[in-house]
Structures are given as structure tokens and as C-alpha cells.
Length: 112
Length: 112
DNA sequence: TATAGTACCTTGTTTAACAAAGTACCAAGT
DNA sequence: ACTTGGTACTTTGTTAAACAAGGTACTATA
Image (cartoon, chains in turn cyan, orange, yellow, brown):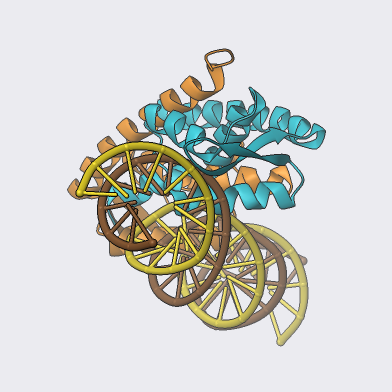
């Protein structure tokens, strides 16, 4: 058991939250997301991101349109659906609660 | 895809962190942990907790001793090993970084 | 000798991350 | 024309973890 693996575990779900958030700010394609996640030090690889986007699409939380690129293959530009927007609001709340809950646990040093 | 499932996902890994933290404060047995996690609104069930404790034991991050109880079967009282303590320090850092990274993502509204 | 409460354990299912491969498009150099 | 490098999206197989739903076993009380 190494802490890298645990770090991976911690990120689960949060990744979904972050991606929905990035999409909520305007049309982006996968590489845009990778850049932003990487700059926030949330490591993510293609093999994780693409299947996640496909899941979000199937759940109708996001939608996309193809757009030609002058510098390579066409790109999928993602947007949030109305359902996705509601879902994101819910996740924001969940995230806040989770941070609070965790902080409550890790700040209890002497209450036992 | 419902947000309950995502909440479950978000908790992964963090749960391990919280449990190590609870154990770090002094000997506890599983039910103690359940009480504290529940009061912090981090839902966890036996089917999750026991296998997790077994994993932590196998990784030699925690140790336990049996203690008789006057009100039922004997209990396993857990303590942190030295390795566990180092690991927990590492996780504390990881958690701090993750919160920071996530906040960076969700506070970026207009930088695109 | 039931019954209730407590404590711990196990099995099977489901889900997601990831590594490592692949396909396909474009532009620039030879 | 053809190779090379960069970009973008996809897929397959493996692994790990959470959970539901069951189980075992101990104690005390009636």
C-alpha cells in the first residue's frame, strides 16, 4: 500500500466534479481539460478522461459538437446540459460537506 | 448517474485517511470508528470498514490487540504503527493539496 | 433455551482508474 | 509521394475498492 495509490483513490469522484466545473465555464475539448487539471496538479491521463466524458455524455450531463481543427483531427467541444448544471450544483454542495466532514475528523485530536 | 454514487466516489481514499486519523488518537475498535464517522456525516457501513481495516493491517499501517468485553464478543482495538504514522503524515499533505487543487479549479470562473 | 444486542467476517456484484495499445487526421520536410 | 511528428480521440484488459446482504459467535436477560 503506497500513498500514490491512496492519492488516486482520493481523487475519485472529485475528478468528475472538477471536469463538470471546467465544462460549465464554456466549451472545451479534452486537451483543454487536461491542461487545466494538470496545472492544478490533479493528474489525469487520457485513459481516465475519455471514458469519464463518455459516461457523462451517456448520463446526459454533457453534450458535445464536433469542430474541425486546422492543426490536426477534429475536436469534441463539450458543453453542460441543463441536467448537468443541476447536477453540478448538487456536487458543489457535496464537496463542501465532504471537506467540512473531513476537517471535523482531522481536527479532533483530544475529544475521545 | 446520480449524485449519491458520485458522493460515494468522492469519499474513496478520504475514508482511509479519516480512519487512520481516528486510530492515531488512541486505541479504538470498529464501532467507535463508525460512531465518529457517522457523526461527521461520513457514511460508512461494516462491509466497507472491516475489509479496509484488514487491508491497513496487511500493509502494516495499523496493529490491533483483542480485548474482552463485558457486553458481548471481544473487540479488536487498533493502534497505528510507526509506518502508519509516517503514512498518515503523507496523507495529510496529500489531502491539503487535493483541497487546494480542487478549490483552484472551482474558483476559476473567467480565466479562459 | 430463546431472544436481543454487540462485534466481527465473507462473498458476489459493480464501478472506476489506469496502462498500453490503437486509429486517424494534419502539416512540414525530404 | 512518403515519412515523421504532433494532435485528438478510442478501446481493451487489469486491478482495486465500496457495498449489499448475508453469515458466525459471544454475552446478558428473561
